[in-house]
Amino acid sequence: MTRFMNSQILLEEMTFSEKMGLMEDLWNHLSRDKAGFTPPDWHGDILKIRKERIEAGDIGFTDWEVAKKEIRDRLS
Image (tube, rainbow, N blue to C red; front, top):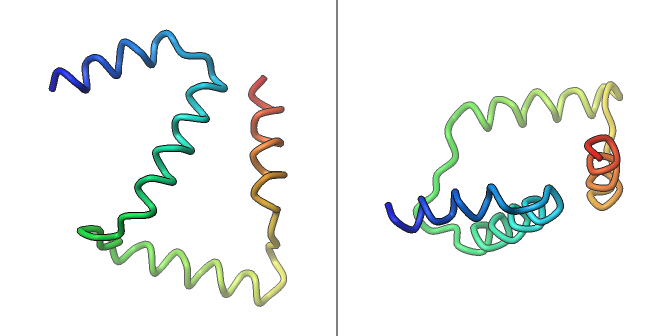
């Protein structure tokens, strides 16, 4: 619990860009270790719906680096 509370204090002092970088680092770390994680059933349902929309031409893709820049631009 103490570590979490210290993290909260650090988060309050971080800039938005620092928080985004930390979130990316955390996600990269978590995504390397797949042990112990089972996605919930509704994730599969969402993926099925998205696949159907892609195949129907209703939605497309944006490059991840482009998407991150667009998000940062909107929030700054």
